[in-house]
Length: 57
Image (cartoon, rainbow, N blue to C red; front, side):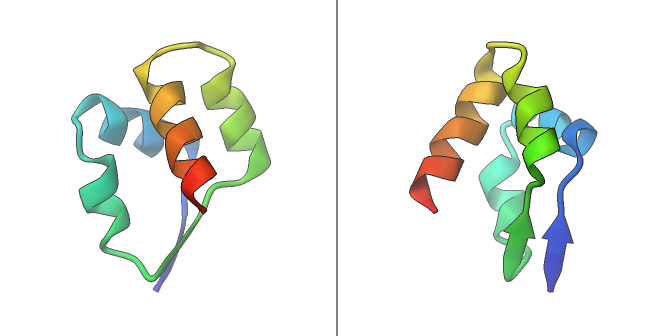
């Protein structure tokens, strides 16, 4: 199953420390560039997590 992530669930999952377990539920996860830009606009743990996971793909 493919999931397309919006910024709100991404932020909440990151704050709960559940990003990686949640991503494992899907075969493929798509994070649009607009979502990456929105999350990256505020330098915090959430943007760091997204950056690290994006670098792995």
